[in-house]
Image 1 (spheres, rainbow, N blue to C red):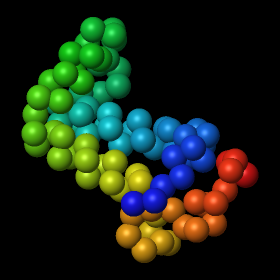
Image 2: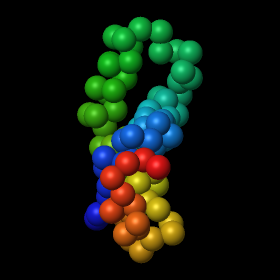
Image 3: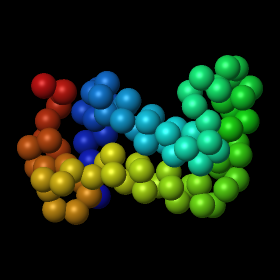
Length: 89
């Protein structure tokens, strides 16, 4: 699995996709909306509950897999062009 993490984390769209891939399955599983998260305590309690639930971890892993996967390349990883890139242009 060759991924150019440096380039990916410079891309705000990738960061947003990764956050959504992790947090939306948690909200859906617990039947919550974003407006239900009104404090940091609620947020971290929810994350802690999710980390203790094997099924939830599988849902998150599948969602993150879909975020990392580039359907234009073989397997999971970046193309040779992206692997050799030094910046996000």
